[in-house]
Image 1 (spheres, rainbow, N blue to C red):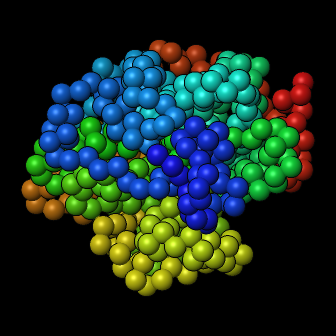
Image 2 (image 1 turned 60 degrees about the vertical axis):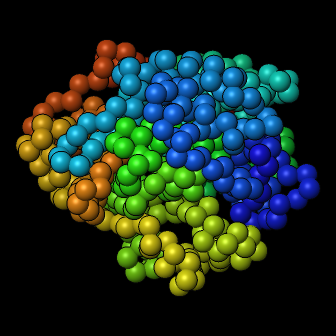
Image 3 (image 1 turned 135 degrees about the horizontal axis):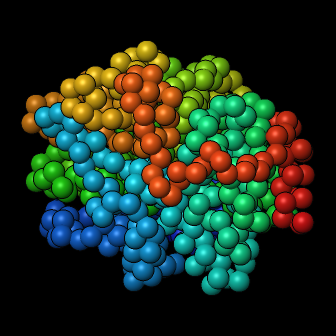
Length: 465
């Protein structure tokens, strides 16, 4: 499998999976996409029903790594990665209401869906870097969960230096501590003055600075890295197979900020999974829902909410969907994205928007509606949902169709947001034993301004100390 940028053509020396894993972002500022979509026929999907989750993950990812990492190596990595999860099924389904299911993606070490990809990513990096005898510096931005998942997956790995930026004061206490209490020498946490979009912009600016990028051997773990998306596709396949696919259609609802998680579901459809509709759940930072309802992709100020992992206005992975809806016209895609960056408004052509609307729906919940949804799901079904999951479940319920199972991505354990859970339900959500002493662990992080040079100097100091 070869890859191309959303802003560039497929060249004769197109990179393979190992290349784009280490590069993260394309040199022209675009995002890497596979040159074609692997196809999975119905007979193969039926055969996959019997596979353990780790083996299924290897089968789904193998076409994307072809020519760089073989299927047997992938299987070994996946068995190691998912063998640490607290639930034997890895990604269990819970029926919340008739034909409305929660796909629990939070049974990994940091209690959030980001573990599903990150645990694979750490092993993929190790494998490729060992083969090439290289070291890289991973820099990532987080709205709460990506950072802790990346740190947990990469801590102590000698070929990786990790720097994570989080918006100061805009994550939950548990989310912050899961990052800042890790003491491994290869980890640096930076609390940045600003919101998640500020952190994300700094990361993109560092990648755009080619001299700095080369100086520190920069790589990415945010979902701008295609490997993250590839490792998220399997759980959509698994849950759909469990409810009757490929012999019936399935719909998904995904609480969405940076668009990577729902894009993985869309990718599963491109590969042959019979997905009827994809429902995007938004909080008060509702740029994606506004776009889906009215073709209004305009940036507004990021407002703190009960669901901080979705406090985002610039959804990076949307560029990948736009590229496809423009029939892979990279020049047109690049032009639209550059204009969006300068003006704060994305002018998506009407025909492309209409194509997106044939599959995608969107629903917004403010904080009061999110709390009400948490309270209702517990009262009616005894299902305790964190704020993000409640938004996903509510979005799924809003767009349910008779006879079509609706699967909502349950993206975080309720114990990651204990204050919101208690306020909504009166219940105390307790951390599991391996995190029980989290609040007594010493923290270590730097608080810095959002100036690019300040962050770059901190990265340099970290890798050179």
